[in-house]
Amino acid sequence: MVAAFARRRKKSTAQTRVPVHPNDVDRKRIEKALARRARYHYVTPRVRASESGYRIVSPCCSRNIDKNGGEIDIALIRFTSQGSGWSLFSRDHGGQVWVACGEFSTLAGLLELLLTDSERRFWQ
Image 1 (cartoon, rainbow, N blue to C red):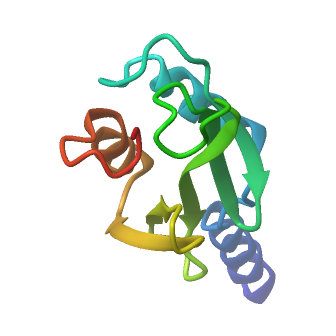
Image 2: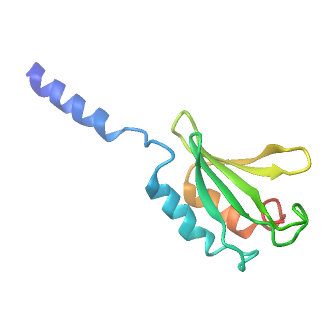
Image 3: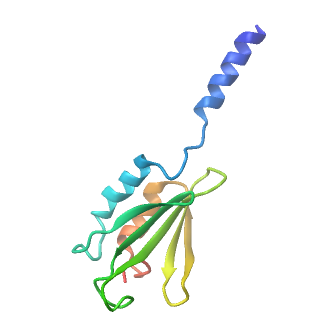
Protein backbone atom coordinates (compact mmCIF):
# COMPACT_ATOMS: atom_id res chain seq x y z
CA MET A 1 0.00 0.00 0.00
CA VAL A 2 2.81 2.42 0.79
CA ALA A 3 4.48 1.60 -2.55
CA ALA A 4 1.23 2.35 -4.43
CA PHE A 5 0.95 5.75 -2.68
CA ALA A 6 4.58 6.53 -3.53
CA ARG A 7 3.97 5.69 -7.22
CA ARG A 8 0.88 7.92 -7.34
CA ARG A 9 2.73 10.75 -5.65
CA LYS A 10 5.70 10.47 -8.02
CA LYS A 11 3.33 10.57 -11.01
CA SER A 12 1.48 13.67 -9.78
CA THR A 13 4.68 15.66 -9.16
CA ALA A 14 5.95 14.76 -12.63
CA GLN A 15 2.80 16.28 -14.15
CA THR A 16 3.28 19.63 -12.38
CA ARG A 17 6.77 20.39 -13.64
CA VAL A 18 7.50 23.97 -14.53
CA PRO A 19 8.69 24.31 -18.14
CA VAL A 20 12.27 25.37 -18.76
CA HIS A 21 12.69 28.74 -20.48
CA PRO A 22 13.82 29.59 -23.00
CA ASN A 23 12.65 26.65 -25.11
CA ASP A 24 12.05 26.12 -28.83
CA VAL A 25 8.30 25.53 -28.53
CA ASP A 26 7.53 28.90 -26.97
CA ARG A 27 10.11 30.65 -29.15
CA LYS A 28 8.31 29.36 -32.24
CA ARG A 29 4.92 30.43 -30.81
CA ILE A 30 6.26 33.95 -30.35
CA GLU A 31 7.81 34.04 -33.84
CA LYS A 32 4.55 32.87 -35.42
CA ALA A 33 2.51 35.43 -33.46
CA LEU A 34 4.79 38.30 -34.54
CA ALA A 35 3.50 37.89 -38.10
CA ARG A 36 0.13 39.22 -36.82
CA ARG A 37 1.50 42.44 -35.31
CA ALA A 38 -0.22 45.73 -36.08
CA ARG A 39 2.92 47.78 -36.79
CA TYR A 40 5.96 47.56 -39.09
CA HIS A 41 5.00 44.57 -41.23
CA TYR A 42 7.86 45.29 -43.62
CA VAL A 43 10.63 44.31 -41.19
CA THR A 44 11.43 40.86 -39.88
CA PRO A 45 11.86 40.72 -36.11
CA ARG A 46 13.88 37.94 -34.51
CA VAL A 47 13.30 36.11 -31.24
CA ARG A 48 16.45 35.39 -29.26
CA ALA A 49 16.91 33.34 -26.13
CA SER A 50 17.41 35.41 -23.00
CA GLU A 51 17.80 34.59 -19.32
CA SER A 52 14.53 32.83 -18.35
CA GLY A 53 12.80 34.11 -21.45
CA TYR A 54 13.03 35.73 -24.87
CA ARG A 55 14.25 39.00 -26.36
CA ILE A 56 12.68 40.38 -29.53
CA VAL A 57 14.90 42.47 -31.79
CA SER A 58 14.13 44.12 -35.13
CA PRO A 59 15.68 46.43 -37.69
CA CYS A 60 14.86 50.06 -36.85
CA CYS A 61 12.96 51.03 -39.98
CA SER A 62 11.55 54.27 -38.55
CA ARG A 63 15.08 55.52 -37.83
CA ASN A 64 13.71 57.12 -34.64
CA ILE A 65 16.14 55.19 -32.46
CA ASP A 66 18.94 54.09 -34.79
CA LYS A 67 19.57 56.55 -37.64
CA ASN A 68 21.34 53.80 -39.62
CA GLY A 69 18.42 51.36 -39.34
CA GLY A 70 20.36 48.86 -37.27
CA GLU A 71 18.84 46.15 -35.11
CA ILE A 72 17.20 47.38 -31.87
CA ASP A 73 15.54 45.78 -28.85
CA ILE A 74 11.73 45.65 -29.10
CA ALA A 75 10.58 43.60 -26.11
CA LEU A 76 11.74 41.29 -23.35
CA ILE A 77 9.54 38.37 -22.31
CA ARG A 78 10.31 36.50 -19.10
CA PHE A 79 8.74 33.46 -17.50
CA THR A 80 8.24 34.26 -13.82
CA SER A 81 10.43 32.38 -11.37
CA GLN A 82 7.39 31.16 -9.44
CA GLY A 83 6.12 29.53 -12.64
CA SER A 84 2.80 31.35 -12.46
CA GLY A 85 2.99 33.46 -15.58
CA TRP A 86 4.86 35.87 -17.79
CA SER A 87 6.32 39.38 -17.57
CA LEU A 88 6.59 41.77 -20.50
CA PHE A 89 9.08 44.65 -20.78
CA SER A 90 9.57 47.40 -23.35
CA ARG A 91 12.88 49.11 -24.01
CA ASP A 92 13.55 52.68 -22.96
CA HIS A 93 16.22 53.33 -25.57
CA GLY A 94 17.14 56.77 -24.20
CA GLY A 95 17.72 55.44 -20.69
CA GLN A 96 19.07 52.07 -21.90
CA VAL A 97 16.78 50.16 -19.49
CA TRP A 98 13.92 47.67 -19.69
CA VAL A 99 10.55 48.99 -18.47
CA ALA A 100 7.94 46.62 -17.00
CA CYS A 101 4.69 46.60 -19.02
CA GLY A 102 2.72 43.96 -17.19
CA GLU A 103 2.30 40.49 -15.74
CA PHE A 104 0.25 37.88 -17.60
CA SER A 105 -1.03 34.45 -16.66
CA THR A 106 -0.67 33.20 -20.24
CA LEU A 107 1.72 33.77 -23.11
CA ALA A 108 -1.28 34.43 -25.38
CA GLY A 109 -2.41 37.34 -23.19
CA LEU A 110 1.05 38.85 -23.23
CA LEU A 111 1.33 38.51 -27.01
CA GLU A 112 -1.99 40.27 -27.52
CA LEU A 113 -0.62 43.44 -25.89
CA LEU A 114 2.68 43.18 -27.75
CA LEU A 115 1.04 42.67 -31.15
CA THR A 116 -1.54 45.45 -30.93
CA ASP A 117 0.80 47.98 -29.24
CA SER A 118 -1.82 50.74 -29.21
CA GLU A 119 0.44 52.98 -27.06
CA ARG A 120 3.52 52.46 -29.30
CA ARG A 121 5.66 51.17 -26.45
CA PHE A 122 7.33 48.47 -28.53
CA TRP A 123 7.18 49.21 -32.26
CA GLN A 124 8.51 52.78 -32.47
